Length: 501
Image (cartoon, rainbow, N blue to C red; front, side, top):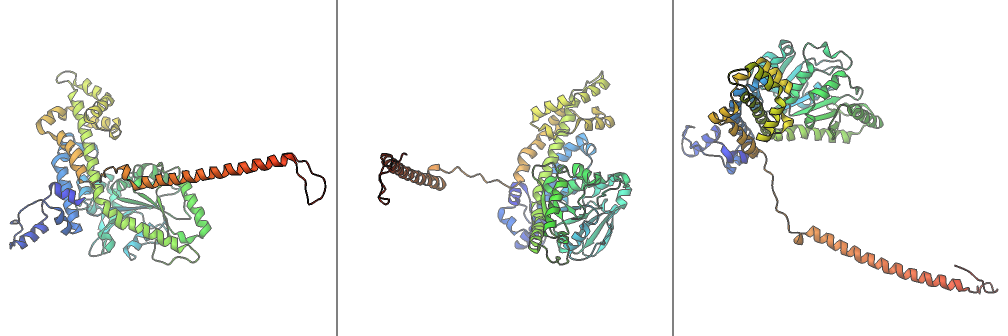
């Protein structure tokens, strides 16, 4: 993955340049010759250097083509986001969701190796808490986190000051935080009114789910009911992110063997109407805290499940984080291209002098025809197109005449061609290469020869069985014919008996 990036277009890192400068007897970094990294250079770089290099290259791709096209058609106002912050975030984001007292904060403390966050039998977490690495233990205000360009949380400002008052950060020197960033969330309300919160909880959760690399939904064996807010969470916030969702049946040692099977079935029964995918998410069954398991419970199962979850979170997710960022850039480029084609094509259909107002109304009403025209011309999947209502709301606040015509923009800057090249050539070249094997000669295929030998042996055995059966049938026919003639029973000393077949 890294080799394909560096082999394509990437310069030496400052640290690598300094190393080369020292080898050449130079002390200054700028005297080292700039050259593309090779596969051997990649092998000598640390994981942090490789990660930083890839992020710099992705950011360069975004700024030099996609961002320029977005600025022409105000895509960031169409769908507000801080994509650059999410692109440059170094550590994957792991999100914890679940009802009150399901063990979310206790789970995080178990990962941190200490009781850093306050826990209790009653609901204690009423805010979103971002747990990240720091040399010293300290609290960080949500207003500071949402204003920092080093963290991917600037998009949370749109939820208002009331939300930011319930958002905070926490730093501690736990080794696990060098690989991932954890986010603790308020408990899902079970029976209370979903409108009792001072902010839009479902929309806020949707924002965190979109930016998270992994989402854990925790359940307590004694609290499996799906309330109104939990239903909204699965049908709205988690919809489309099912591949990143993991279900955790926590506190599994609080019930016995037979009760655990019933609880496991009841959990799937309650979630069956909420999960719309054909394949259910992975379910981990264990007790995630530092205490020993209770006696007479399945300790081996709990420990195996715990190790599988930790492997998924601490190894698989960080390893796949860069692939996910490349995929996010690809999706962002596709959406920006679709947005530019829609507005640019609609602008081309407007009259130049008379009937401008009617022309804008007609262009908005004919968005479905513009979608079909764009799909056929630029080979864009129509399922990825935004809803027509989004453009109606957007054009109600922006004048369509303020945007450039698509053909004039392409003739002047060539941005459409650049983004298409980025989508079709450059970004796919960064993804993990897929090996293409040549087709093996079936005449030299051992598997095929083995199958043919088995068929020949089976045919020979069948022929032997047929001959044996024919011989048995012949002997049976002779015996029946002999019995039909009648025979005397010498042991009884009487007259011959007549028998019929």
